[in-house]
Length: 308
Image 1 (cartoon, rainbow, N blue to C red):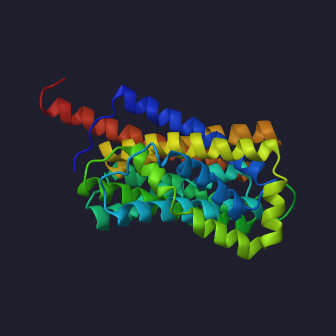
Image 2 (image 1 turned 90 degrees about the vertical axis):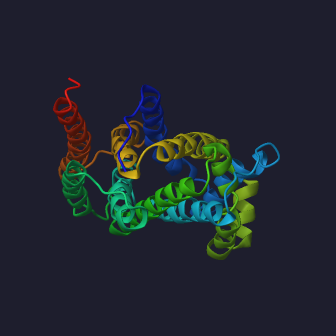
């Protein structure tokens, strides 16, 4: 499948997603100061889905796609990520490690979607993988450091994000649908599993205490995660995945760490170790190789056909 060129509107959508998701990790950390990971997940998707069911028509897709996306992107991705942030993953490094979804997506897209990656994509993602390995080996157990448990859980979150990317592409082959209804209705499916896990892990009394004593910072965090990070950002992300091959879209998320590292430094004073900085630079260089390689191939093709 040949990649369509990204329009100016698509580029603006991608940048909006980058900014929202970059700030997203700081907001999660703030929310987890007043809520447990599973309860935060339940409230996030309840706010993103339940209020809109009466106004948003169900997308013309089989239930299996809606449920699969909701469970993979909702329960899987954010269940792992919230636990990782609680168990010592820093907000800035989480924004970097989550970009493993680009590797997992390319690996899954070939056998499941038949989308073959270009040589530049593999080279760029290989460079970024070296950066992620540098980050992984710089873990520690001290205050403000990334823990190994947090890293592993965040890695699992990146894999589940990739699974949700594949679900979007498969659903797009079944029927044409609008991303917003898809996000709204899929947000319903993680609510009960998150709530059940919160009751099991925290206990009923703790859940009631958290709900009755919720502060304004936690409440605003839930609203940001539901309205901006879920409905708006994932709606834009899903629209991009519907219009372009997964390998063309997912590398843009490698820009999220730029915003994520800056916001984590501004709000929490998190300052990565030198090895982590080196790894983050390698990740971003991987994105440059990926995108510039595709651009250079397009220019060569146009020259060969006499268009330029």
